[in-house]
Length: 200
Image 1 (cartoon, rainbow, N blue to C red):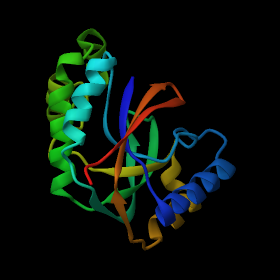
Image 2: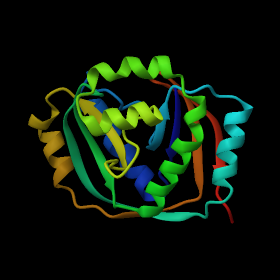
Image 3: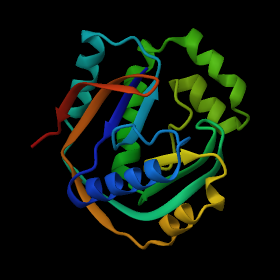
């Protein structure tokens, strides 16, 4: 699997790290907590080689750095893909980010491993998610995508004081996105392939 990420910086990075450590100490059965801090732009089973890197480079070298604002702590209750309640930091709606996602997904369509993508259909019931999965190999491409930084996923986490305290906190972090990174992912293992610097 290949993931294309925005990595948090400065105070936002430290805040995510603090909450990941908090969850790790509070729940022995949490998921996603050990993953590097990131916001997923695109994630799918694609053939990754020089051609893939070239296609990504063609897009990203034309994109100027842009700002994102992380402004709310929230939860995806009963997150089917993660298997628990998933707490995250929401990114304020951003047209530049949504356009960039569609550009990347369109460029990577020729590299999709369609047989493996088909197997994922079983757990998805939502028609919008299924349509996106079929077209792009990732169920969250389009206006229904909610950009965010995941902290962790815990079964029945919503009932815990830790989750309630996280959701109560008022936040506002502004980050300038200057790099987009590409990672090879196998289970909980994340290996950085390349960071693309955006256009100066």
